[in-house]
Length: 98
Image 1 (tube, rainbow, N blue to C red):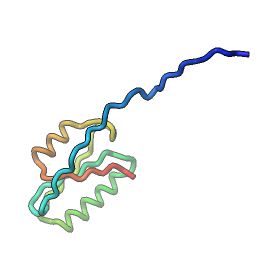
Image 2: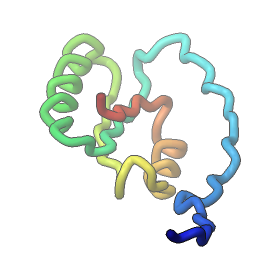
Image 3: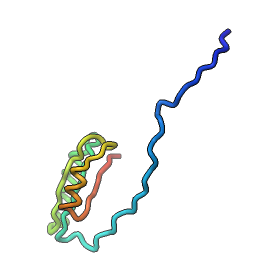
Image 4: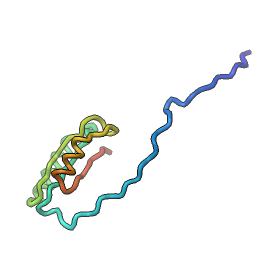
């Protein structure tokens, strides 16, 4: 009969603390604005985003719609994309899958 004890460590480690950020203020209108639509490449989202952009461009013809795919996975940062959106865009819609 074995009576040895094992010490097991949690393989997940300690996650970093969560930073709470305020939502951006709502635009009074999107007419004449540039709106980025960001796809994080969740499986099979490309056809959905193409259809969404087609619908938005038809419904809001005076708004410039820009679609971008985020680099890496959902969990990875994409600083160059965020900088582009801050510099050239007025708002962003991000799709994260289902």
